[in-house]
Image (tube, rainbow, N blue to C red; front, side, top):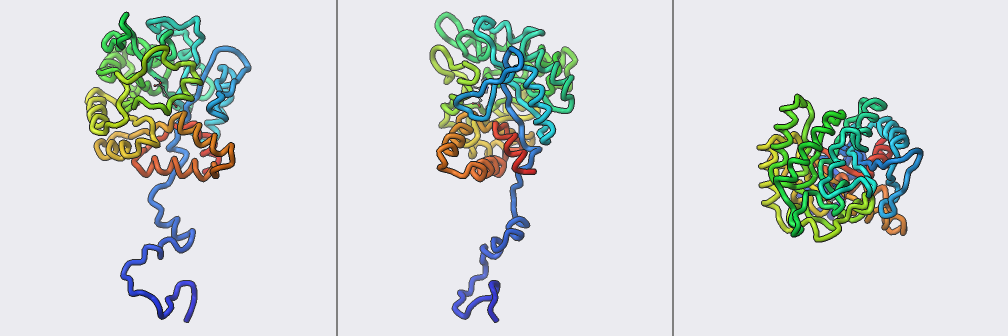
Length: 336
Ligand code: PBG
């Protein structure tokens, strides 16, 4: 008897043959451990002032800064694709920036007006707003800076609290502090509760590394630091235990979900963080990770779709429950 499934008389007597489960596509599907779905995806989007314009971000092909009207159209399309949530980032005109980020908590500012408009136009989409000063400061640091260039932790938190409150007031579902100041989660939670926003959640960028992978995003927002770097607040790429310390603190202070950022070079961190908490864990597939795949694909050097799916699946396999990714739309289409 000889068929594809039968052995020849030369067969070794192996008790285990793992390849049995890989023999056909159906079998592989049956034993697949990790399934990426559209429900895992959060789409980061950039809003700018103006009307009827969108500008492609050079280092992030396929990603745009949208004026509000076009952003609303795009969000309607994104929602139609089944994507549940967006993370909103503003491009602030230079003349609205100052040293203390006052525009960040303007109740009629770009972010606040955008949130109100989205809630009105596409009420079902979950809106996550970024809480950090960098889009609003002339120096482009995430915090307030003293005359010696030092980042002031506690003074920064006062501004972050005002910013988070104004976003909650506008209708944000989650505020997402990405600044890495100490104690900000607790301060924001207390302030939200004190003002009655008990149902506004906090997605904490808990383990956010000082990473070179943010380059294209800083192009998108014109937010590269004007002096120094972010290493006194964002984490050292060499550290893992420190990530566990940060998530422990953020959970104790009231985070609802926690994030590891970037994702691809930090899959071990995602894995450890997942093991250390029962909260949902998000991973941020950041701008540089997106740009690398796009650039290689544009050269025809990789199979773009396969690489995107393999990359996001690896993040989920590592333990991410949610993935912030600029590929969200493309992936939603691929998964249909
Ligand atoms: C800033 C912020 C950054 C990103 C999200 N929020 C950049 C930075 O810390 O300089 C990066 C996102 C990306 O690279 O895709 N608070």
